Length: 152
Image 1 (cartoon, rainbow, N blue to C red):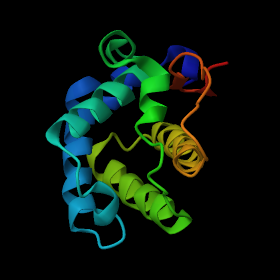
Image 2 (image 1 turned 180 degrees about the vertical axis):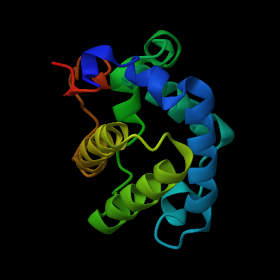
Image 3 (image 1 turned 180 degrees about the horizontal axis):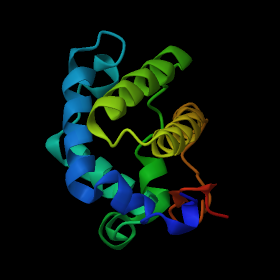
């Protein structure tokens, strides 16, 4: 099946319910992980909720992150001064992809595109977390990711 004949990427993922299951299962592991737990020591249920809303918008669902939570700039600002290490970034990716393999549909292209987004996004988060100062500039709208990768 070509990507033209597929449902939207968001629908293929299973929409917000599937992303909620994914993120809940993922953060259960994060909090128990010795490499990642220190990064998330002060995180809240709102953080989990916001990740679901972010991923929903990125993958073509409702634009709630933009409408309610401040959009791309706000998401990046949440990562300022976290000082994420490469070890933490890589572990985050490893856990997320292992969880996605269990929680999301097994479609190889879906899993590949999801993994590409996670890799891309975590590199940006790490970079922002280690930049000097608090000026982000204007990063533009929330990126959109789908069957063909990043939508330009």
